[in-house]
Image (cartoon, rainbow, N blue to C red):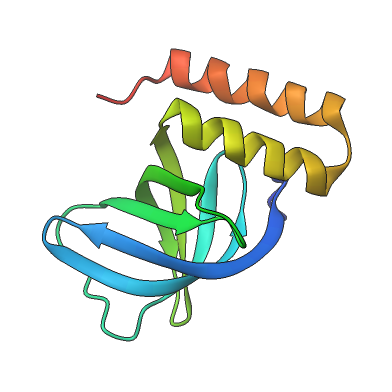
Length: 126
């Protein structure tokens, strides 16, 4: 059965920090969407009881920092998939623009934003 993504993902390789409580891991972002991110699994990463994480990265060549609260959605030996359940308005604005520039279809992006908002309204996270 093939999985069909509802959100456009863009390849975007940049250093990132994954954190949980007092733990911080250096990693690399592989791709990003409005709904989540795929990162390289840090060599020293330990999976705790909580699935909640914080992901931070800077847009290449700028001071702009994207921060999102995520939960682990899948993992393998090399990668971690993260589902974004909260992103601040500044980060969301910058991420939206970055995806818009890479996807090249503003109408598609607006449909995805509407879908994301409706999902969050139907299933709010505390």
